Length: 237
Figure 1 (tube, helix red, strand yellow):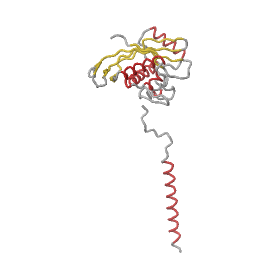
Figure 2 (cartoon, rainbow, N blue to C red; figure 1 turned 60 degrees about the horizontal axis):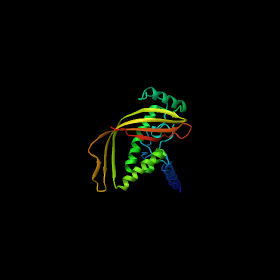
Figure 3 (cartoon, helix red, strand yellow; figure 1 turned 30 degrees about the vertical axis):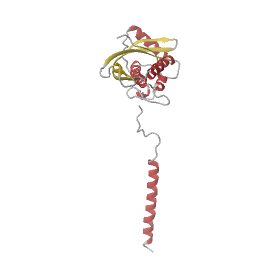
């Protein structure tokens, strides 16, 4: 009998240990939604991002992630001078008076990301991803161009090699709406193929320099930090 109690103690401790192990596994094995482990592709500036219900979203300010804020500052920082001279500087000053959070460098970084994503969505014919980034008029023009291309049985191949320059050439307030025009100089490969795959325009083997002027706008009275594309222009080259 005297040897039975130690044996019983061993069994008891083993059961307790097993119970604790199971409890630890049940706690440590849970996923609480903060593990990460997925790529968050227009998140924006340094990364490209996707957020909430917008596939190509200009996300809200102030969360500390440049990818979440295409056109708003993460924190105050020294800015570069605008490229367009005194008139542009005066326009930037007026925009800052209306929106103290406006930051020139952050805006340009966001505009570059928007340029790349809008170009990509247009090339692939993804009108849904374009909608939150464009004014109704510009979106309608883009959709019409996509439909004409599809009706003709054509496929667009437009590869952005890189943005060489992105300069602010115009900035002004119209009522409470800020407008900023960015001149993009980029290297691209452009080609259009017909339904048989034959090239009918451009050259898929040649890199060309493309100049575009895009105007972005934002109502400074709105809590929505998103800027939208309201006008495009491609000067004769």
